[in-house]
Image (cartoon, rainbow, N blue to C red; front, top):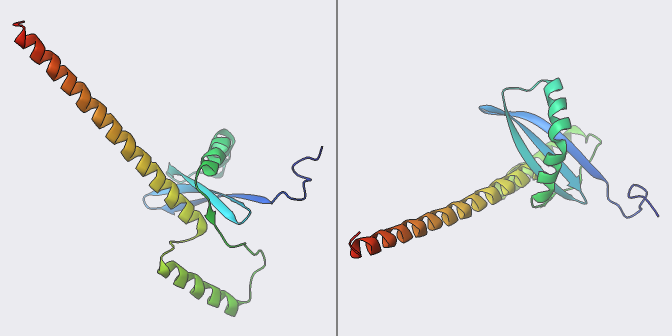
Length: 155
């Protein structure tokens, strides 16, 4: 029985964790890239984490972060090149990327994935809030009807 690592059809997966300052907090972005798709999730740290704190955080919460990233919708991403292009080509690529961003796609594939995750979380939260509000309204109505019946009976 072949192992997943030796399977010829398996696509390589790359995982990266980037920490950056997103005013006023330090934020970590976990990107999982596989088969031309990127899934991402973010975590807010607050103050700037040290290397040792990041290491401990990833040991403790790395599995949960990967699960969160895999639960998010994938975003198609162009294949990354590891070699540095010639400077003139880099300028052309940057201009092309800026034009693409101006057309409507915001930022990198990881940023797009994080944006989709945030929108999904907001819509779930709004639906939960509506459900709770409706249940509370029904509870208040039932209480009001019960009080009305008691008053009608003279109690």
